[in-house]
Image 1 (cartoon, rainbow, N blue to C red):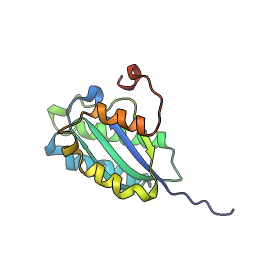
Image 2 (cartoon, rainbow, N blue to C red):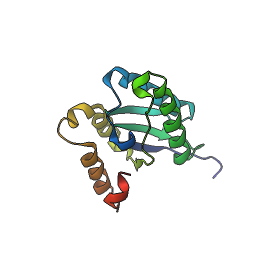
Image 3 (spheres, rainbow, N blue to C red):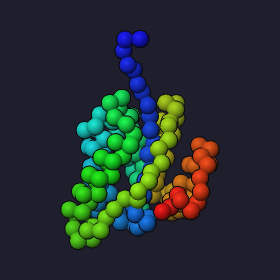
Image 4 (cartoon, rainbow, N blue to C red):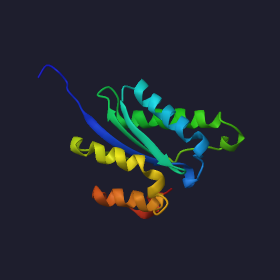
Length: 150
């Protein structure tokens, strides 16, 4: 085969350090746009970005030119630096070390877009921890509760 063809949809989830509620509504849209810009610059087409006060969801197409770990390194380091430029409140802004990344069937893209779009309503009833545990269960990921949150 002479041509490389890749179309990998990824749903990425990560939280602020210690799940601190540092993503304020006043900066949320700008942060989502900034995250999308980082993805776009790395040729990982952003499809939907959203989240809540303590975490982010990114649905994107993973570029054939970059590894997932490199994408996450760039997204988290650059956005953390940017958040710290937004005032004294954010001087200690950090992301948690880990992240979750889940493949998405192309037929489920609209469902994931809607899921990400409705984060505020969802988290009026459910914590980030419960949401993340549900992802791990859905994707049949074995995990040790002790290590997921540190």
